[in-house]
Length: 76
Image (cartoon, rainbow, N blue to C red; front, side):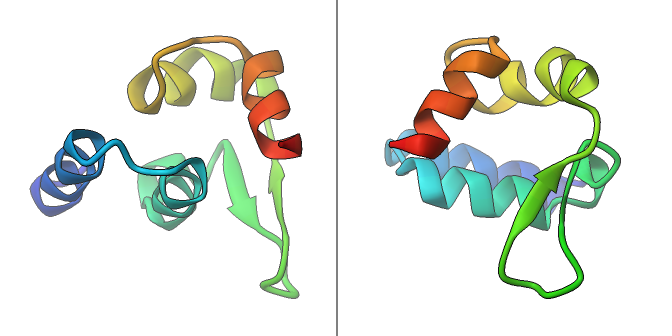
């Protein structure tokens, strides 16, 4: 993650960013595109590798590290 993105993320965390804001930030981060990305229509997204997403991305952005908890937040 480059320095500007890292600073933006720290600002989001300090403000207790909403789940949609964090999700948008993750989808906008090039380092995460191997795990989660926008679909070609630009209106939806997809987790490409759920095991790697759970291991590398979730702990970096959320206070939990479970894919099932992430899915529960998506559904809520």
